[in-house]
Image (cartoon, rainbow, N blue to C red; front, side, top):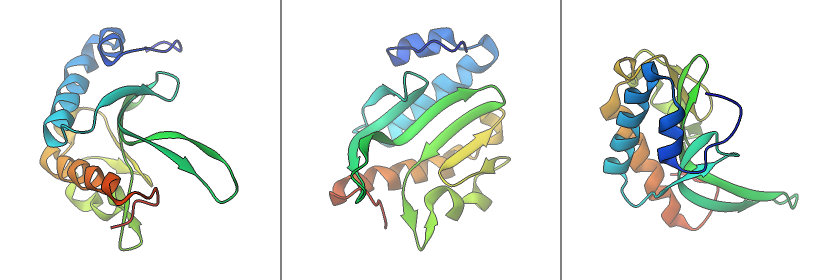
Length: 142
């Protein structure tokens, strides 16, 4: 995808390389089905489809807008971002062993193609993250 940003999820999909478009659209549909109340929007300057927007403010005074779940096509593969913590680990880290042929960072699950991801396990995390928006805080701990 080029450096310029998309303004809608539909425009984002249209700009994806053909070899990734079906996987990203299928993952988008799965997120919408797993957590329909997490409305999609373009986040991070149009480079990520965000789901479940929220506003945060740190004790330092830094504040901004983010999403509880995010989806992005990257040069090396697809990235699924899941915010939240459980038992001192991020949701993504805590479920790493169940997610399939992926690499996991703090909140990022990276994979080459959708077939590499255990979609059911990932959508369980999306549902968990969705519930975290209800707590009224932005530390997102279970």
